[in-house]
Length: 196
Image (cartoon, rainbow, N blue to C red; front, side, top):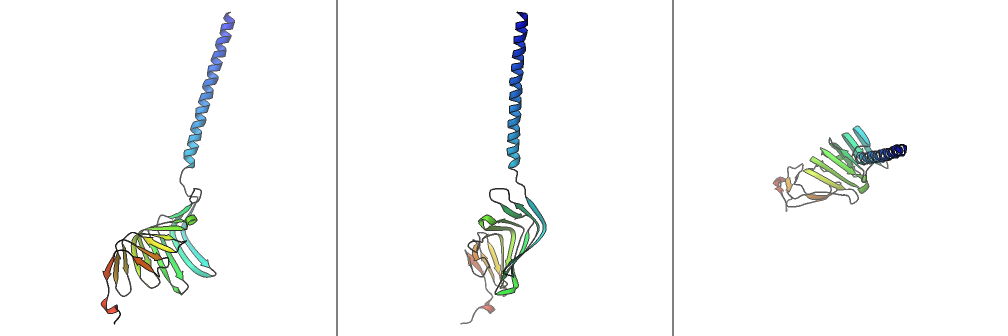
């Protein structure tokens, strides 16, 4: 009888330890799974390009020259994008006047190629082919519709000394050949006004 009791106790101890080990392993597995989920959601670049100097051509014609100290590409996420966190300098060329490029400078830029949407922020300065200068805090480019827009205050100056302020932003063609200002004011050089 004593032997049966000892065997019974041993079986219970083995069963309890087995169940305990099962739950310990199961809880470790869940922790590892949760850790893997958290780690897989980390946002890190898949590619980094230092001192980027990119040239885009179409049928032999240079369309864009692009320079940035650092480009970070995030391609393993739902909506891939490229960031220029330390600024960019861009020259865009017009077939009508290919020798004088328009320029865009900014402290930060983000490109969402899938949506054909781009943004530039931080002391954005655009100079078009006619020499007009546009200064604003941010600008957005809808490549698909060939339109640039901002709701920030835009300061515009030209070669003749005319100065305009668009207090509530602007919408422009992507080459800045046509634009609409919102709530604008400014000073016009009277010497440059057309005579009637």
